Amino acid sequence: MTTSDTRRDYLQNQKSSGRKLLGVFPAQFPRELLWAFNILPVEIWDPPVEIAQANAHLQPYICSIVRGGLELILQGKSSLVDGYLFPHTCDSLQNLASIVNDHLDTGKPCFFFYHPKAVDGQPAREFYRNQLTQLIDRLEQHFGSINIERLQECIQTSRRLYSQLNELFNLRKQGLLQITNSDFYATLRRSEFLWPTDYISELELLLTQKCVKPLPSRAVVLSGILPNPPEILSLLDQHKIRIAADDLLNGQRRMTFLPTNANDPLEAITDAYFAQPPCSTKDSAIAERLKHLQKLTVDSKSKGVIFNIIKFCEPELFDLPQLRAGLRSTGIPSLVIETEINQVLSGQIVTRLEAFLEMIGD
Ligand code: SF4
Image (cartoon, rainbow, N blue to C red; front, side):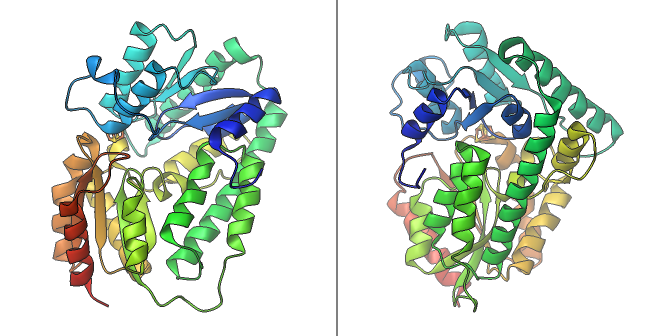
């Protein structure tokens, strides 16, 4: 496997090798459980499809992630997968899950994962554990019994993977990674469809880009759902601005913590979930999100925060005014841009971004 292999070729090869594929919608799901079933999670965030049929099933004010995911299914472009997994990330994705499961005849099983809308406390932990058990039960009905030893091995693999990711995030924070924002996220996002051991090999390669002295670059924090449209990254690259840390749902918000050493594998997965940074889709307190953003900015010596909000993303939009006001009160400038996935950045957004970069200075 090389980084030039296309996603489809890779998936085809995985399938030919006997692995099952599950199309997984954003964002948080217990990937170790799927690996233990020899299932490769294939995440569906921003498929490159022209919207033609999805609008007939959706209200106009729905985000482009949901619209794009539904279009992918309607166009039959997800035919390789053996089923779909819908985490309960937000109402829009829940709505999509109902449309696909109840109204479309895909001929593939749908699985659901309801993570708790509470970030701590024993009842929330019990709820999460219970969801893990229910997901195992449902997967066993389609893919055979889970092997607990195999699950333990997957937890070990996950620890290796997440500790490498943490090392990468740390190097990036210190400016010790000789790589553009575009290339960094291109590699990071290959976690969305690579088998973990293949992904670990790619991360090892990326870690060789480590440099001895920090790069002379201005830094910002990127917040939002995912680094799309990709022009945002190339624009920052052109202006020699480094994303030193991110608060992306598709990035550090879900990739920071590794399963603990708990003997019970489900406990290890649960620990990792509850150790993750605060998130709008888990109803985290805004004060916690603000504290987290301030810490990311200060620790990474960033000059400001760019919120890249996907249009109609309610969870993110609800938190935004208070987050910005809180940042402002501590002297951290921020910019909000609203984008649709896979759309070219408008001239107006480019101008606003460039004005913000000029404003935060050297
Ligand atoms: S962009 Fe926002 S509204 Fe859309 S799926 Fe993600 S969390 Fe839900």
